Structure formats: structure tokens, C-alpha cells
Image (cartoon, rainbow, N blue to C red; front, side):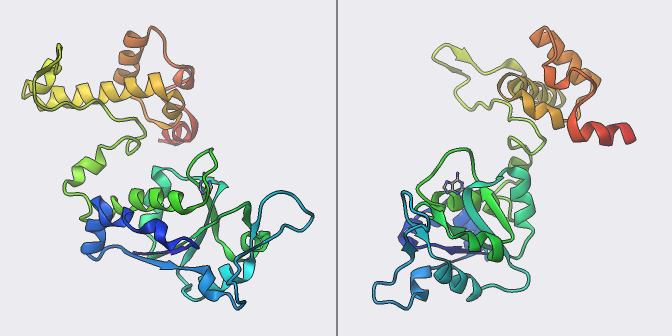
Length: 261
Ligand code: ADE
């Protein structure tokens, strides 16, 4: 796939795409990254990309013309054009999976107070936020999204099983992991992990993932299919089931699917 960044700060991206899975994905040719600077599409002496907001108020607004021209210089019929802003749909692992099946993403990195509303109304397909906080611009958000997408591309991560067992891949947070030494500062590796019993290890991991999720992010359990064994385990460990799963095998959308089956 190809990802093009529309940014007035190309220097921001010196480095982040040259290490880890993003570098490997680029080297293997499964990911190409391009940078287009709206400043290159200005016609005035000062190469102006921002202006004062109509109606007054603090902060500058990114002008529409340079952004439109930058996007139109690379847009193809199959391109998905995304504006990065705190007002967008929340980026998550599911969205990363959907994006990695596309052939061309164009990520517009807003700056200053924001982009002229015509960009939102006429140019983009989707608006995405990486979380409920305000960054100085979309550049850091683009790096986050590209890393999440790159590691899902074929060959970017050495062991694909490692991706399959990541937090969120099955709707749950990850189980704890340990390496050598077996004992460190008085804390030992759980016996089951050195037992050589793969079935017992898998069961322990499932249970630890359930427990981690129930304690830290119980709302995620709304969309996870829980077996009777999972529920019994959580009940034993926590004394009661989290409110999010009290009303059945599982909650939310998945519950509806489950009921149909
Ligand atoms: N630009 C500024 N804040 C942002 C956020 N939280 N997500 C995406 N783009 C942004």
C-alpha cells in the first residue's frame, strides 16, 4: 500500500519511518510513504498556507487552496483521503485493519487552529483522531497510525503469531509476559509458563487477559464473546462479574450476533 502525508512540516518525519516494522515494511516493498507539502502549491511570495479566521478569534486557520492542490496532485480514484484532527472518529485496532487493506491513503495533517471547513466539506472521505487530547498538529497522529498499520502488513513483523496475540486483536488486553531470569528481585515467573504444558499456558494467558481487561478496561468486555468457563473464572477472581457483562454471555453488538447463532 501507499500512504501520502500532506504536511507543512516534512522535517517532522525524518526518523520515525526508518526503524522497526515501518522500515521493514518499506524495505520489503509492501509500504511506500510519500510526503507532499502544501507550501509547494502556493503562488504568493511568502508561500502562505494560513490566514486569520473570518469572524475573528484566536489562532490561524490553514487555507483551503494549497491543501486542495496538494491532495489533487496525488489523488487517484481508489485513494482514501483522511483528515487528522481531534474531532475525528477514534482510531483503533479495527480501523488499522481496515486501512491496511486499502491501496492508497492520503493523510492530511492539520496545524494551527485547524483547517478551513471547505476541506472537511468537499475534500475528505473521513476524519480521524488518535485520542481525546489536542496535539500541535496531525503529524504525530500520522506517525502513530502508520506504525499501527505497517505492523499489520505482510512480513513487517517477524513472527505473525505475535501480532495475532496482541492486545485488542481478540478484543482483550494482552496477558503478562516474562523472560529470563526465572526469578528477579524476589518475583518468580509463574510456574505454568515453565511447565511445558501448552494447553495450560494457553488457558493461563486467556485468563490473565480476561482479568487484565476486566480490571483496567471493563468496557472492552461488551464486545467480547465469553464462554461459561471465562465467566466462572472472572466470578471466582473478582467476586462478581463486571457490570459490562452481567446481562449475558457477552454484551453489545457481539451479543446480538451470538443470539442469532
Ligand atoms: N491533531 C491534533 N490533535 C489530534 C488528535 N488527537 N488526533 C489526530 N490529529 C490531531
